Length: 246
Image (cartoon, rainbow, N blue to C red):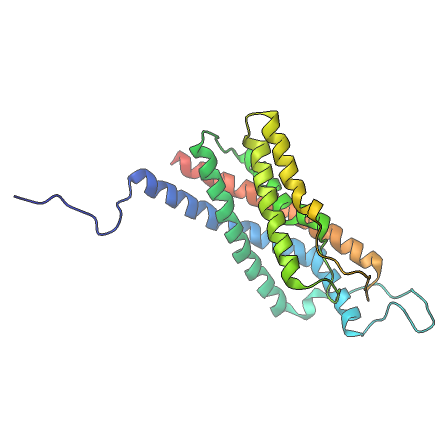
Protein backbone atom coordinates (compact mmCIF):
# COMPACT_ATOMS: atom_id res chain seq x y z
CA UNK A 1 0.00 0.00 0.00
CA UNK A 2 1.53 3.27 -1.07
CA UNK A 3 1.80 6.10 1.41
CA UNK A 4 0.49 9.57 0.48
CA UNK A 5 3.23 11.97 -0.48
CA UNK A 6 4.17 14.50 2.18
CA UNK A 7 6.18 17.70 1.94
CA UNK A 8 9.38 18.01 3.93
CA UNK A 9 8.58 21.71 4.09
CA UNK A 10 5.11 23.28 4.23
CA UNK A 11 3.51 23.02 0.79
CA UNK A 12 2.62 26.28 -0.88
CA UNK A 13 -0.33 26.63 -3.18
CA UNK A 14 0.15 28.15 -6.65
CA UNK A 15 -1.71 31.25 -5.45
CA UNK A 16 0.71 31.68 -2.55
CA UNK A 17 3.72 31.24 -4.83
CA UNK A 18 2.29 33.79 -7.23
CA UNK A 19 1.71 36.24 -4.39
CA UNK A 20 5.29 35.85 -3.12
CA UNK A 21 6.64 36.32 -6.63
CA UNK A 22 4.45 39.38 -7.08
CA UNK A 23 5.67 40.91 -3.82
CA UNK A 24 9.33 40.17 -4.55
CA UNK A 25 9.29 41.41 -8.13
CA UNK A 26 7.31 44.56 -7.41
CA UNK A 27 9.41 45.50 -4.38
CA UNK A 28 12.82 44.98 -6.00
CA UNK A 29 12.07 46.81 -9.25
CA UNK A 30 10.21 49.66 -7.56
CA UNK A 31 12.77 50.02 -4.78
CA UNK A 32 15.77 50.22 -7.11
CA UNK A 33 14.06 52.64 -9.50
CA UNK A 34 12.79 54.95 -6.77
CA UNK A 35 16.03 54.67 -4.79
CA UNK A 36 18.19 55.79 -7.72
CA UNK A 37 15.87 58.71 -8.50
CA UNK A 38 15.76 59.68 -4.82
CA UNK A 39 19.56 59.66 -4.67
CA UNK A 40 19.77 61.89 -7.74
CA UNK A 41 17.33 64.33 -6.15
CA UNK A 42 19.43 64.30 -2.98
CA UNK A 43 22.62 64.97 -4.95
CA UNK A 44 20.93 67.91 -6.62
CA UNK A 45 19.06 69.47 -3.69
CA UNK A 46 20.29 68.10 -0.36
CA UNK A 47 23.93 67.02 -0.62
CA UNK A 48 25.24 70.54 -1.46
CA UNK A 49 23.68 71.82 1.77
CA UNK A 50 25.27 68.95 3.72
CA UNK A 51 28.67 69.70 2.23
CA UNK A 52 28.27 73.38 3.06
CA UNK A 53 27.30 72.55 6.65
CA UNK A 54 30.39 70.36 6.96
CA UNK A 55 32.50 73.47 6.39
CA UNK A 56 31.00 74.99 9.54
CA UNK A 57 31.27 71.71 11.41
CA UNK A 58 35.00 71.46 10.70
CA UNK A 59 35.68 75.14 11.41
CA UNK A 60 36.73 75.87 7.83
CA UNK A 61 33.96 78.47 7.75
CA UNK A 62 32.70 80.46 10.76
CA UNK A 63 29.27 82.03 10.99
CA UNK A 64 29.67 83.95 14.24
CA UNK A 65 32.94 85.84 13.84
CA UNK A 66 34.97 87.20 16.77
CA UNK A 67 33.59 90.70 16.18
CA UNK A 68 30.03 89.43 16.68
CA UNK A 69 29.10 89.52 12.98
CA UNK A 70 26.60 86.90 11.84
CA UNK A 71 27.49 87.32 8.19
CA UNK A 72 29.21 84.46 6.36
CA UNK A 73 29.77 83.41 2.77
CA UNK A 74 27.24 81.25 0.99
CA UNK A 75 28.13 78.32 -1.20
CA UNK A 76 29.19 74.68 -1.06
CA UNK A 77 31.99 72.66 -2.63
CA UNK A 78 31.14 70.94 -5.88
CA UNK A 79 29.53 67.52 -5.47
CA UNK A 80 31.93 66.26 -8.14
CA UNK A 81 34.86 66.64 -5.76
CA UNK A 82 33.94 63.39 -3.98
CA UNK A 83 32.41 61.10 -6.64
CA UNK A 84 33.03 57.85 -4.74
CA UNK A 85 31.10 59.14 -1.72
CA UNK A 86 28.10 59.91 -3.89
CA UNK A 87 28.24 56.55 -5.66
CA UNK A 88 27.90 54.96 -2.22
CA UNK A 89 24.94 57.27 -1.59
CA UNK A 90 23.17 56.01 -4.71
CA UNK A 91 23.77 52.38 -3.77
CA UNK A 92 22.63 52.87 -0.18
CA UNK A 93 19.52 54.70 -1.38
CA UNK A 94 18.61 51.83 -3.74
CA UNK A 95 18.97 49.30 -0.91
CA UNK A 96 17.00 51.44 1.55
CA UNK A 97 14.13 52.07 -0.84
CA UNK A 98 14.02 48.39 -1.73
CA UNK A 99 13.40 47.66 1.94
CA UNK A 100 10.73 50.37 2.04
CA UNK A 101 9.19 48.86 -1.09
CA UNK A 102 8.86 45.45 0.57
CA UNK A 103 6.90 47.05 3.41
CA UNK A 104 4.75 49.01 0.97
CA UNK A 105 3.99 46.02 -1.24
CA UNK A 106 3.23 43.91 1.84
CA UNK A 107 0.66 46.58 2.63
CA UNK A 108 -0.77 46.14 -0.88
CA UNK A 109 -1.11 42.40 -0.28
CA UNK A 110 -2.78 42.95 3.09
CA UNK A 111 -5.16 45.51 1.65
CA UNK A 112 -6.15 43.18 -1.18
CA UNK A 113 -6.75 40.40 1.32
CA UNK A 114 -9.37 42.62 2.93
CA UNK A 115 -10.99 43.49 -0.41
CA UNK A 116 -9.22 46.76 -1.24
CA UNK A 117 -7.80 46.87 -4.75
CA UNK A 118 -4.58 48.79 -5.42
CA UNK A 119 -4.35 51.01 -8.52
CA UNK A 120 -1.44 53.00 -9.91
CA UNK A 121 -3.12 56.25 -8.86
CA UNK A 122 -3.78 54.77 -5.45
CA UNK A 123 -0.11 53.82 -5.25
CA UNK A 124 0.79 57.52 -5.19
CA UNK A 125 -1.45 57.93 -2.14
CA UNK A 126 0.21 54.94 -0.49
CA UNK A 127 3.59 56.54 -1.21
CA UNK A 128 2.52 59.87 0.25
CA UNK A 129 1.34 58.08 3.37
CA UNK A 130 4.77 56.44 3.56
CA UNK A 131 6.39 59.88 3.45
CA UNK A 132 4.12 61.03 6.25
CA UNK A 133 5.04 57.99 8.33
CA UNK A 134 8.84 58.05 8.02
CA UNK A 135 9.55 61.74 7.38
CA UNK A 136 6.80 64.34 7.80
CA UNK A 137 5.22 63.17 11.06
CA UNK A 138 8.54 62.60 12.89
CA UNK A 139 9.80 65.98 11.62
CA UNK A 140 7.08 67.71 13.64
CA UNK A 141 8.94 66.69 16.79
CA UNK A 142 12.47 66.19 15.44
CA UNK A 143 13.22 68.14 12.25
CA UNK A 144 16.12 66.93 10.09
CA UNK A 145 19.42 68.33 11.37
CA UNK A 146 22.54 69.49 9.59
CA UNK A 147 25.93 67.87 10.27
CA UNK A 148 27.42 69.27 13.45
CA UNK A 149 24.06 69.98 15.08
CA UNK A 150 23.94 69.10 18.77
CA UNK A 151 20.87 67.24 19.99
CA UNK A 152 19.55 65.06 22.78
CA UNK A 153 20.89 61.54 23.39
CA UNK A 154 20.48 59.15 20.50
CA UNK A 155 18.68 56.37 22.43
CA UNK A 156 15.62 58.40 23.54
CA UNK A 157 15.42 60.03 20.12
CA UNK A 158 15.38 56.64 18.39
CA UNK A 159 12.67 55.35 20.74
CA UNK A 160 10.53 58.42 20.12
CA UNK A 161 11.02 58.11 16.36
CA UNK A 162 9.96 54.44 16.45
CA UNK A 163 6.91 55.31 18.57
CA UNK A 164 5.98 58.09 16.13
CA UNK A 165 6.30 55.78 13.11
CA UNK A 166 4.21 53.01 14.68
CA UNK A 167 1.51 55.39 15.90
CA UNK A 168 1.34 57.12 12.52
CA UNK A 169 0.99 53.78 10.71
CA UNK A 170 -1.77 52.68 13.07
CA UNK A 171 -3.54 56.02 12.89
CA UNK A 172 -3.44 56.29 9.10
CA UNK A 173 -4.61 52.69 8.82
CA UNK A 174 -7.59 53.45 11.05
CA UNK A 175 -8.44 56.58 9.05
CA UNK A 176 -8.07 54.87 5.65
CA UNK A 177 -9.71 51.54 6.38
CA UNK A 178 -11.96 52.27 9.35
CA UNK A 179 -15.67 51.89 8.75
CA UNK A 180 -16.88 54.76 10.92
CA UNK A 181 -16.07 58.29 11.95
CA UNK A 182 -15.30 57.11 15.47
CA UNK A 183 -12.54 54.83 14.18
CA UNK A 184 -11.09 57.68 12.11
CA UNK A 185 -11.15 59.94 15.18
CA UNK A 186 -9.36 57.28 17.21
CA UNK A 187 -6.78 57.08 14.43
CA UNK A 188 -6.18 60.82 14.61
CA UNK A 189 -5.70 60.59 18.39
CA UNK A 190 -3.20 57.74 17.95
CA UNK A 191 -1.20 59.86 15.49
CA UNK A 192 -1.08 62.69 18.04
CA UNK A 193 0.13 60.51 20.95
CA UNK A 194 3.91 60.80 20.38
CA UNK A 195 3.61 64.54 19.82
CA UNK A 196 1.65 64.91 23.05
CA UNK A 197 4.43 63.02 24.82
CA UNK A 198 7.01 65.22 23.13
CA UNK A 199 10.28 64.43 21.40
CA UNK A 200 13.52 64.57 23.43
CA UNK A 201 15.20 67.99 23.24
CA UNK A 202 18.00 69.81 25.00
CA UNK A 203 17.24 72.72 27.30
CA UNK A 204 19.47 75.05 25.31
CA UNK A 205 20.02 75.89 21.65
CA UNK A 206 23.23 75.07 19.83
CA UNK A 207 24.24 75.71 16.27
CA UNK A 208 27.34 76.51 14.31
CA UNK A 209 25.70 76.87 10.88
CA UNK A 210 23.45 79.74 9.77
CA UNK A 211 19.76 79.38 10.58
CA UNK A 212 18.94 80.07 6.92
CA UNK A 213 20.99 77.04 5.88
CA UNK A 214 19.28 74.84 8.48
CA UNK A 215 15.76 75.90 7.44
CA UNK A 216 16.56 75.37 3.75
CA UNK A 217 17.93 71.93 4.60
CA UNK A 218 14.74 70.91 6.44
CA UNK A 219 12.51 72.08 3.59
CA UNK A 220 14.53 70.27 0.93
CA UNK A 221 14.87 67.04 2.90
CA UNK A 222 11.13 66.82 3.48
CA UNK A 223 10.36 67.81 -0.10
CA UNK A 224 12.71 65.18 -1.53
CA UNK A 225 11.28 62.59 0.86
CA UNK A 226 7.72 63.33 -0.27
CA UNK A 227 8.62 63.18 -3.98
CA UNK A 228 10.69 60.00 -3.53
CA UNK A 229 7.94 58.20 -1.63
CA UNK A 230 5.28 59.18 -4.16
CA UNK A 231 7.54 57.80 -6.91
CA UNK A 232 8.04 54.63 -4.86
CA UNK A 233 4.29 54.21 -4.47
CA UNK A 234 3.70 54.78 -8.19
CA UNK A 235 6.40 52.32 -9.24
CA UNK A 236 5.35 49.70 -6.70
CA UNK A 237 1.68 49.93 -7.74
CA UNK A 238 2.61 49.86 -11.42
CA UNK A 239 4.69 46.69 -11.09
CA UNK A 240 2.08 45.21 -8.73
CA UNK A 241 -0.80 45.69 -11.18
CA UNK A 242 1.32 44.42 -14.10
CA UNK A 243 2.01 41.21 -12.16
CA UNK A 244 -1.69 40.78 -11.49
CA UNK A 245 -2.46 41.01 -15.20
CA UNK A 246 -0.03 38.18 -16.09
